Amino acid sequence: MRLVLERRAETPWTLNLLSPLLAVGLTLASAVLVFLAMGQDPWQALWVYFLMPLSDSWGLQEVAVKATPLVLIAVGLALCYRSNNCNIGAEGQFLLGAIAGGGLAVAMHGADAGRWLLPAMLGVGALAGAAWAMVPALLKTRFGVNEILTSLMLVYVAQLLLDWLVRGPWRDPDGFNMPHTVVFGAEATVPLLLEGGRLNLGTPIMLAVVVLGAVLLGRTLKGFEITLVGEAPRAARFAGFDEKRLTWTVFAITGALAGLAGVLEAAGTVRQLQPDLSPGYGFTAIIVAFLGRLNPLGCLVAGVFLAITFIGGENAQIMLQMPLDVTRVFQGLLLFYVLACDTLLLYRPRLLRRSGA
Image (tube, rainbow, N blue to C red):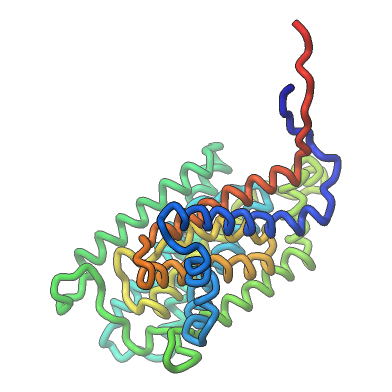
């Protein structure tokens, strides 16, 4: 007997609905085993990780703050993956956006800039992220280079560039030799929505992007083109759609949203540039995109769930003395289960008898 995967003629809608729920359930079951292996009470640990962040207003605000960059990046990645383009370098585009927007804030520090500074930072950050994403798009459309490798390698270039800047020319001269820039001035920071927390204007911007992304995919010709090129490239060519031009478009959108998320994180949450500006938002957003079924509204729900794991991991580190890397383990398991469940959406497992010699 041997196990084979037979492609389904069509995928039942019930499987599309249950697949991400099953992935989350398997992740929680695996979390229980991890907690037991570490000598922790699994029910207490599950409460700290997944429910405590939702138990008070401060936790809810922090979940929204963490979800904002994840969802912004994931919406762009969803468009990219739907068009059969694999952008793995959103982390680098996030950092380039933060560098560009943050660099403008550093340059104007103490110069009594007006209200134009923050919009300029957001615009420059989005353009920088889009420009960084154009590199793998150019290499793919012009030379046929695999975009997975080029976009991923550019992440390390962006990380090293940020590290050099905050340790060198942009380092705060009054920062006791610590690797960070000056704290951004009031005109260069994203306004808070509520006192006593970090919830800022970035969250409404993220919600607006989700709505625009849903409208783009569901109500416009460009959204139809993205879906058709990804699912039936030959039919798209017969329809007159330019696959290379679409590659440029989706990479530009993805990079712009990632760059915008980088500026919002630097100017809204951290309020300065530092080497560990991102805890891996660009990579975690890949999980968000697939868990959200490559749909902007689904990305919103998935982003909130992943944000809960970030806050829960910090709570567990303080209350249960658990390493923060356990959060990365859960996120990795979630991605594994999402991909495994998606495989069962497309293929039906069957047992076949081996033919005789």
